[in-house]
Image 1 (cartoon, rainbow, N blue to C red):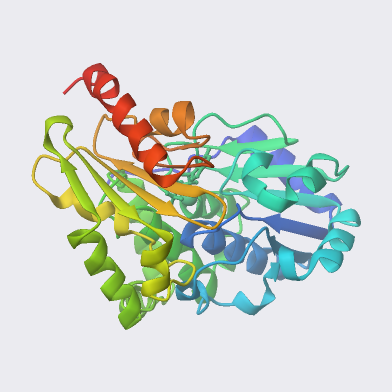
Image 2 (tube, rainbow, N blue to C red):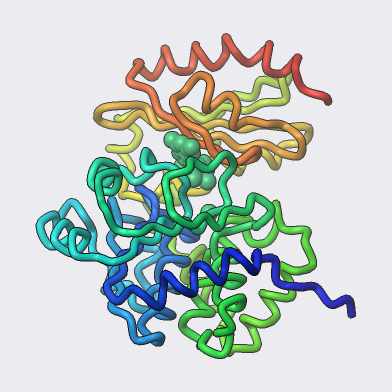
Length: 344
Ligand code: 5GP
Ligand code: MN
């Protein structure tokens, strides 16, 4: 078999080694509205640092879906809005802060201002495009399918792969599968499978993880999905694009809980010929929009240029304070030019 190597820059890892050596109290910050990759990579890093004799703490800018609550050490995550004083005090006396699965303080939600002004040294571990230069050391690689993949490389490059136990492996695997739709997209690098193979060898129960993450719909959530695909779906065949709309009333009717709409936006991409799919979700004070695309369709450009967001080429997010109908009208207005610009 080809010898597929670790992809971390050796000079950079030496610097990280020094920073880690000098630090005791370490904060780990996932992005606001964290997903499986953000929480998985944060919990993996947390457990690794504990094994190294450090005092780490994960401070999440906001709460996250219940289907991630089974992750090892989940109860150690401090949710900022309900622990503001404790979190602020901890950050103030931290030697080092890890910015995980995001690359701009704008994505740190309520922690944005606090992190900006914090004198502690900072390390970024992330795989999103166009990182902002806001840290002392940046581990940023858009070729990684997930921050969890990069986290594996980070730990291995530090010479500590022997510290990756079953629990850490479960966290890393969860981030890799959730960020790739179960290893379906953005996951064609053989190295990813070498890493997955290694995680399996460390004793993870793949079926249990899949069941915990995916087979945990409430009946309401399943019906909400049915509603989205029946009443909420509009297919714009001319532009190979589908739109799903969810109103505040829909959410109320199906007893919406945080995380319930996770993954819904992917479904229309299974319609023959679709290149892009967008979901508009009417929340209390804004409309949250998720964008997905296939292949060489940079849907993140639409998110960044028109909807105060951004993300990866095939998976991006944004928001607007416009009314739901206005947000959709705006998307339909910019879609023809975007479609024309594509090389399809
Ligand atoms: P989701 O649709 O699941 O919220 O987000 C999809 C992807 O886009 C994720 O990788 C997420 O990090 C990114 N993303 C979501 N919202 C924003 C945003 O407001 N700004 C940027 N830069 N990226 C976002
Ligand atoms: Mn990610």
